Image 1 (cartoon, helix red, strand yellow):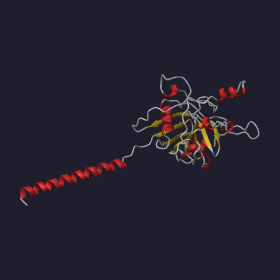
Image 2 (cartoon, rainbow, N blue to C red; image 1 turned 90 degrees about the vertical axis):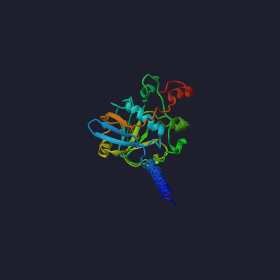
Image 3 (cartoon, rainbow, N blue to C red; image 1 turned 60 degrees about the vertical axis):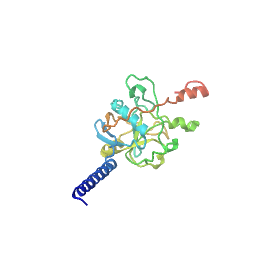
Image 4 (cartoon, rainbow, N blue to C red; image 1 turned 45 degrees about the vertical axis):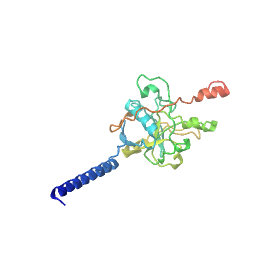
Length: 253
């Protein structure tokens, strides 16, 4: 082999090796450089800070809805209105009663001032990608339950802004509520919420879950790490009162 030809062959081999190395590095970087999940910072007045990681791969629309509401300041100043010790703490109701709902204008300024709901992303509602289990620290969307009236789907798709955080494992909820994240810091604050004093039950067999002094959510913000999750898909909420009036007449509160 002539000297010139040999040099050209060596150069070609070096270029080939460099090309293969570049391709391999790019592939490795793609595998290892995954987008970081959104991180929630929740400030509870007088108690401290809770951080949660959200899972858009498990419940994408639920995560998007929560991010939009949080980063638009919707949750700031609301309370934890329902606390069941060693079960869960529930907040995010604009009325503070358990019956409130968000409005489209809370998602986007200038939008309609009408309440909305989102579809439930969980197994019992036909959504199979969400396999999160209800362990302590899991955050999920609260919803209504109209199953006794034969209105199962209406209840499944009734979440809006109210959420709850588990204070103890409870497998009975697996697959029946839209879990979408988990506490990663501030477990001691969650434990303090769990110990909140509640009022006695109003009647025998009723739930004792109304806080004497409802803990205030000072603020909720979400770091999306540069990812734009867009706007959530919404739907018209089921009007239970109108349904009951139509079925039976009279006034239903």
